[in-house]
Image (cartoon, rainbow, N blue to C red; front, side, top):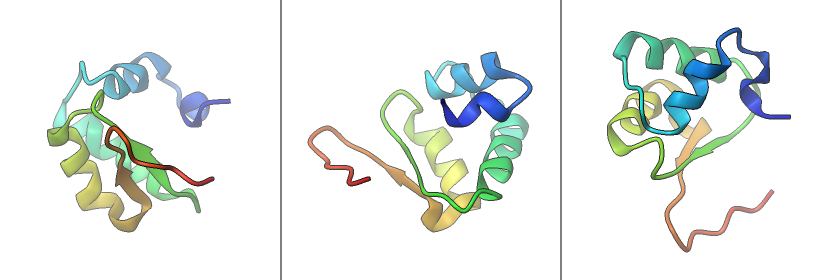
Length: 74
């Protein structure tokens, strides 16, 4: 199950994850929604630095940018 399965607009979330969509208001809405979960999230190059930066400002330590070669421990 993907984290975005609970969202109403899966297509929008997938576009965000694919780095194809960067509407500021919707990115803010998504980040605020994810922030409600007691979880840690990671994004990578597909999301893009501008969207990651916007989400990071809202989500703080709950969001990490994963780069090539990084190790993610679950």
